[in-house]
Figure 1 (cartoon, helix red, strand yellow):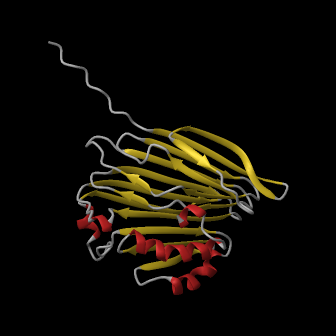
Figure 2 (cartoon, one colour; figure 1 turned 180 degrees about the vertical axis):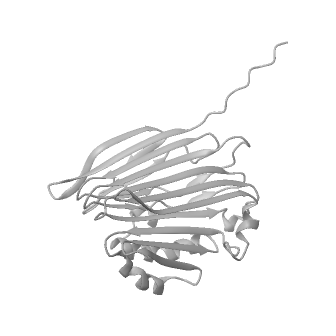
Figure 3 (cartoon, rainbow, N blue to C red; figure 1 turned 120 degrees about the horizontal axis):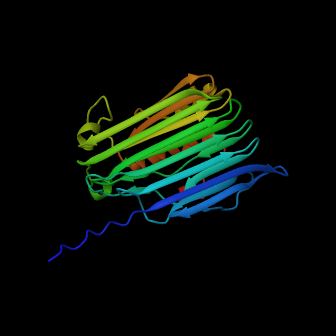
Amino acid sequence: MTAPAAIAAQRARGKARIGARLRNGRSAISDLHMSGSSKLLFPRAKDALQAVYLNSSGGVTGGDAFEVEARAEAGAHLVMTTQAAERVYRALPAETGRVETRLTLEPGARLDWLPQETILFEGGALDRRLSIDMAGDARFTACEALVFGRHAMGEVLHDLRLRDRIDLRIDGRLAFADRLHLQGDAAATLAHPAIADGAGAIATVIHAAPGAATLRDPLREMLPETAGVSALSEELLVLRLVSFDGYTLRGHLAPVLRRLSGAELPRPWMI
């Protein structure tokens, strides 16, 4: 008897591309593409063009692949967020979910990259990259938050494969590069006092704009003892925050992001 053929597991694919252009004094859509499981929604906003990303597959698992591209053209203001927290589920041993995001800011543009948290589950495997290329007089604010299991559900991650990369270029010059690699028992690694001292959630906030360094001291006054902010140059601030869980993390993040953006957070953050 012939053995039955192996059935390939179904995998999610998605691509989203959005461009913002200044038109009659307002930021409007200049380019738009959506395919697969990637969708973009456009709630009404007063000044900026706001785009809400939705992964209709419900999360990321091994073998999934997603791409996001966003461009703020000269003078335009684009705000991007996600409809909900992204979830990274258990993957087969040889498979990894991949997410790649590329952001471009032309002269005088502004882009706020404010996705909600990424929640990692036991056995998850994620390879993620965020690349930003911006003009020197543009204004960029970004937040990337990771939650290592849901504390309220008693989740502890002993099996995780995570590779996370951020590259920021200003006028073609690499201004910031960040690398995070966790393999195996994430809880044990995060428990180390020199790493996260047992924290279950972490966030990185980047603010790049002319004169960004002047915000360093005001931000320090807003932060808990488990966070810090540094001015890497006159035009670049980087903040790192660790918290007991995702709920506590969000409570500390929200006022910081409001201060940096000068506006309320996108509506999905309030739900």
